[in-house]
Each structure stands twice: as structure tokens, then as C-alpha cells.
Length: 347
Image 1 (cartoon, rainbow, N blue to C red):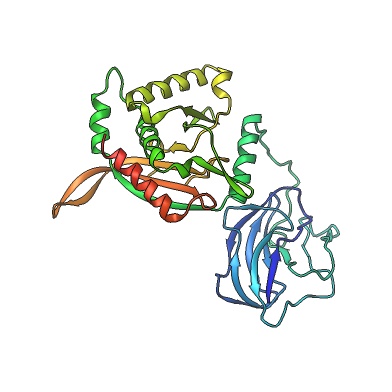
Image 2 (cartoon, rainbow, N blue to C red):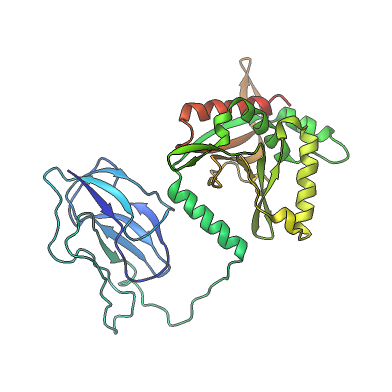
């Protein structure tokens, strides 16, 4: 019998709960009372126990995910049925100092899918009497935080990674005048052309159907003094990399000058996010809803590759495509990524 394990109400904080790591792997047997995973709040790191004996068959959250009380986080095959205690099933040790009475965790009695949680930090160090530091979030950062949390919690991401021969892009970039082509322009142009051949990537998931995005734009993620914005480049398939570069640079200048029109959120089929300038080789990005994908671009660097049976040094760039599995299959997304690579290597 499958028993859903739900995140208990820790009753120690109003902050979000973050998954730190799983202590067992899918397919392993688990005993009632055995520690399953570590979670973290703004107050402490806590161990979460199983209330059932059986085999862990599925996990629904990953390290780094933010979760809420009552959310299903795993499934255990209990075989002979769930082991449900008759007393309250949630228990958490208070984060208050030992000299004060421990605050009891709340919980409903005898409910299948409940779990135990114990505060690991309570026995290690007392709570500091000093006021906690905090940083206020701007309205923009709050919106980004909310959207990214919703994206990670509700969109089933999968990731495809490959690398691209960047030699042609380097030559064309250096030859451009009066200024070099912005790196993002190459990727926006390549995505725009690939989207023409893979139109399903222009749809988004809406409940029980897929809806067309209604735009031909490709977004470019831009960081401006710690604030994240997305510049939408329209009709990229019909524009040269030079033209797209000019539009991106112009929009960035307007953004930094405080132009509110540029800061408005505009629809795009997908977004390009580039951390190559920060010396990042490769990374995975969170999809910007309601888009179906996002392309993460790393730095261009020389690598040893085999060409015609010989080892040569070639400048390459790593790219990672994050995709909404509700919209497209892995094979479709892989073919789409391959089309992007071909376009990038043809400049």
C-alpha cells in the first residue's frame, strides 16, 4: 500500500521550509522513526522522520526546493498498510533556550501521511539574544522571488546540456563595427530561428491544455544593480545578430537610466540567461513562467577536441536548456536544442 508522506507543521517559524538533503535514496527500505531528510528554516536545521515502515518509492521534492506544511514530499510502499500512531503524529523540539519551557508542536491525531520532525540545532547551541539581521526586498525582488518559487514548485523541470563550437561567433563578433556583438545576441538569433521549426516550444501549459504564447519574442535576462529584468527581443528570426545586439544594448542603457517602459514585464517564448561574464562554466536556470523553457549560457573557453582524427584546441561554450516537461517531451526538446546548436555554429 502506498503511503503519502507529508511535510509536518514544524510550529517553530512562519518562514518557508527549505529541503537540505535526503538521507536515504529511492528504492531503499525505511523503518518507522528513521530519519528521511534534513530541512531548514530561518530558525534551525531539522531532521524529518518517517511514520511508516516500508520502501521509499518516490520523492517529490529535491534539495534546494522550498516547501510548505502539508505538502506531499515522498511515497512509501508499506506493503502491509501504513503504521499510524494513535497519539499526535507531529513533534518538534522548541528553538527556545533550555531554561524556558519547550513549546509543543501542533498536529492532528492519527493521520496517514504525517511525519515527525526534530530540531537538530536545539541541542547544539542556544538561540542568540541578539536581534537578527535582515535585508528588505524591493518590490521587484519580491515579485522575482515569488515567481521563481512558484516555478520550481509547480513546473516539472528537466535539463539538457551540451556545448557549442564558438569559433565562428568569435570571428564575427570581432569583425563587427563600431562595437562587438553582444554575446546574448547570437543565442537570441539562434533560438528565434529554431522556434520557427519547433513551434510547440511557443506554447505554455494552462491547466488542461496548451495555449499559444501569442508572441514571437525571445527574452534576455539582465541584472541591473541587483534587480533582475527580462528584455524582450521581438521577431528575432528575421534580424541579424548585429541588429539584435544593438537592441539589447539600447534597452540596457534605458534600463540603467531608469526608463519605466523598459522595465515592464513583456511576454516571450523563452529566455536566455548568461553568466559567462562571471566566469561560470555551466549552470541550470529556473524557467520564467509562463514560458516553457530557458537557456543558460556559460563562458566561452578553449577546449581540446578531436577533429578529423586529430586533437585541436577549439573555443567552446556550454549551454543548458531547462524545459517544462508538461509542454514537450525529452526527445522534442533535445531536437530543439540540436537546432539551436546548428544555428550557433553557422554564424
